[in-house]
Length: 206
Image (spheres, rainbow, N blue to C red):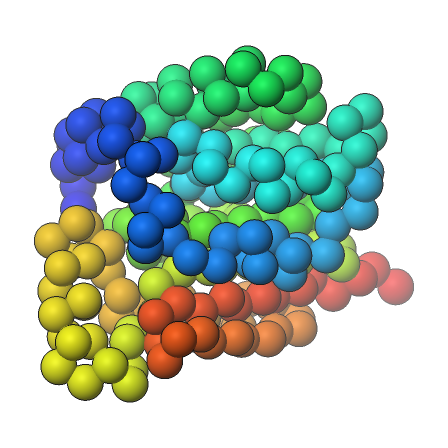
């Protein structure tokens, strides 16, 4: 999907995202748990959308000591996220409009999360590589996304096709790439391949 297509897709979906995605985006709280956050952690969510996952992160952070940065390519989605942040009075949330494949924030994070976002990023390998560069020693990078529906039989093909129509590509080796980048790695699959959580950790400095 081209950059222009991304903008067009989310220009409409920004208005319906919160009311519809709960049906399909399962396991996000569980994915945040895999970040193993401390109250003073610095967290980056890449492809944060309207901020649906912010509450799962912020309930683990001290409002004064912890910090959450949400990055998204869609200005329309970020406007919705900003309204959510303002309405809830989250003073430790920063929103950044940017391209994940060209990420250059000039700082590192204790935890980085892709939650149902990596599969919609055309330059996904660059996005993972840039994310890893932003990870502190000992930090965790978690990718939570749709799986390949391996055990779903004919229904699996229908699901993959439907997701592709919505610009979600399930066939790329996301977990394998994360394994290559990180020093420690674990992979969890749920519901017969409906989704997966891949956890990579950067080696601590000696």
